[in-house]
Image (cartoon, rainbow, N blue to C red; front, top):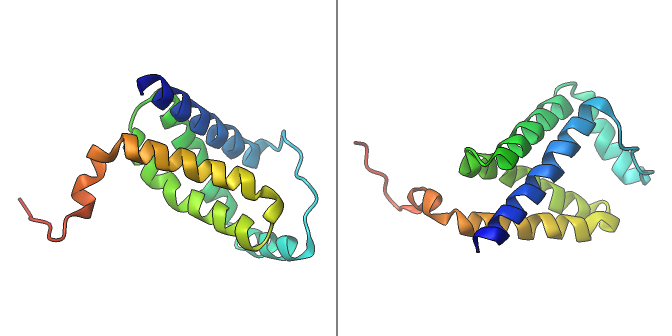
Length: 129
């Protein structure tokens, strides 16, 4: 199980570290977009802050996963990102859905592996100490 966890952590870390850096340095070409996808992406880009914010957190979280430090924090940061990647491909760009499903499965695997760190998040009533 430790080997599988290491492999999944490094794979997920590489994906987000590389894709986060690609958002700044554009070393991987962007595939052609359909009309609906282009509208959606232009809307996000027009905010001016969204993509730099997203790519910064992808890069940092990917680096944390690669280094094996603050892994639960990286998973918490990446969770809404992965959910949005999945929903984006589910509703707007089905061609990328297999990759999105793989990301979801990798996140579920690591979330389960690090479940002890998340137990307190699922308590009905939190006590202030």
